[in-house]
Image 1 (cartoon, rainbow, N blue to C red):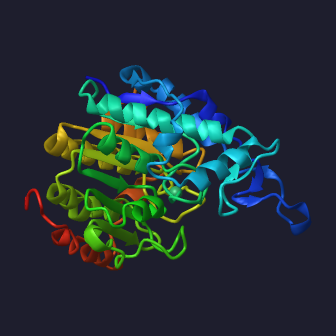
Image 2 (image 1 turned 180 degrees about the horizontal axis):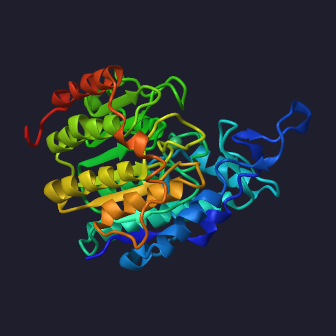
Length: 376
Ligand SMILES: [Zn+2]
């Protein structure tokens, strides 16, 4: 069996306009016009690198299709879906909500194609005909809440995938493991009171959204205990992230016993990333994908779907994607990480005590996940 792969050329055409990093261009304010940091450039390079390394040939293509409005409404409000459609229909587009989520003309249709493609991938993986799945999409999704776009994210692809699995495919318990370096606030808010969706996020503390993703945020009502955050200090690297995987993510998955694992995966933890200050290397992503793939094999017949989120170093993020896909597929591409020598110091850097302390505090939350199925 092969890993499924879903992308579409239109994803690279979602137009975020001119900006400096994430600030809309404003020459009179000194914000020089440049490509928005979340343009199609980096992910197109990621796609090309999967091709050139031969990894694309090892995967099974799953075609995209537009999400139906009814599918979007499982997660998003009617008013929000309409707002995105209205802004996208304007000749010059608009914004999906927070002023930092630009929509080009036609972006609503592209966002629907991304979301629908993710749902097709989830169906294909759940059918048992694929080992697992990887979706390379734009716009990203994990910051989007039920009623607003946020942080470049329009429709919450991971949340839509979880609801699709439950409502359409009859899977009950879904785990979301958000490995983008910014907090997975959208999924957390959508499933805040839901005991059937475990939401675990490893991210840089206090990055984006600025006051979100703290250890104290653990869900509410019936969902109490099913949200776990690992807010890592600035400068956390390979050792800390792998420790967080082993001490928090894997035990949490084991306790929750998911029937499907969804992984919003951003490569903005890379050591050359412009929008965060973590220090991961390509091999970090390979190892995290391997750990999750093995957990999925043990827990849920391998059912795991990874969905691309952020990652803004056009040089390094595509290589982090190669590492992650190598972990998912269990195969090596025909080129090896050209940055390995340059990043060797980052790879070898030890975890520091204040990083370990955060991870161990988060690990103490795992036994609070109600063990309805298995105490493991
Ligand atoms: Zn991010």
